[in-house]
Image (tube, rainbow, N blue to C red; front, side, top):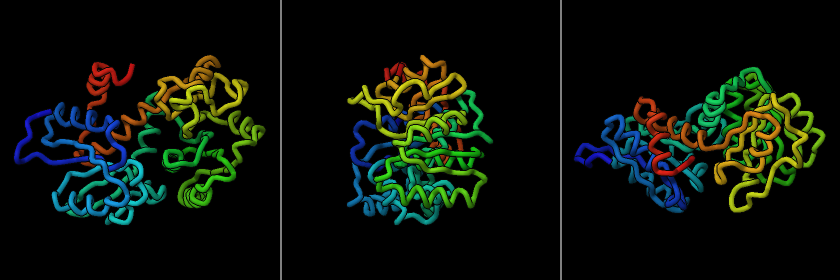
Length: 293
């Protein structure tokens, strides 16, 4: 990190826990590489002390801050405005300090859609099948609709407490975009097979297959897969889940969630600085640090 001076601005991450986060590594490298006089720190802040933390950061005139669990929804109470994506999703992962006004953004879906484009996959006018209705799935769904995806089939447990939220999101998106959204029970394998046959992209936005339970797979067998289908798993620990291994064996383009992580960070970085995150040097740096293969 460059030398801290009296002019150095602050950006940070608020969440609990945060000790595992690589966001400080990503942002501090990018600030230093581009010669931006700013430092990024991670603070262990939960919902109970979020209000005090936000008041303090505002008083300190910070550049901005990120939110991770459990603060992405609670932060809405303390903001002065929301971006279109954040308003639709009802969750914020990035806050911009705009001359004392705190504006909330959500770059999770933006990061995912950028990772899709990075694979050479064009989704405008296409159909997508999405597994899960948690925070990441909601952000992906909203951004996909805003980016021109024609149809989104969402599969989730019929008992999920998130169903009312996703139904509202689906209704709002269908009013504000040209995207049609269909909700299905995750146990309905016939509907899943039909949805995947018309899809360009299949996305696992659940935790199924994540370490330590690496034997889990969101699909019952490889018969649902075909070479023209791209498969994304937002998990990146392990680096290659059973789903991605299965997809590669079926001839699919398959990729994990690490690029989504980097691109959502790049979205925050651009909001705060107006500059593009130096992705190629950053990836080289993270490889040197053995953060990923």
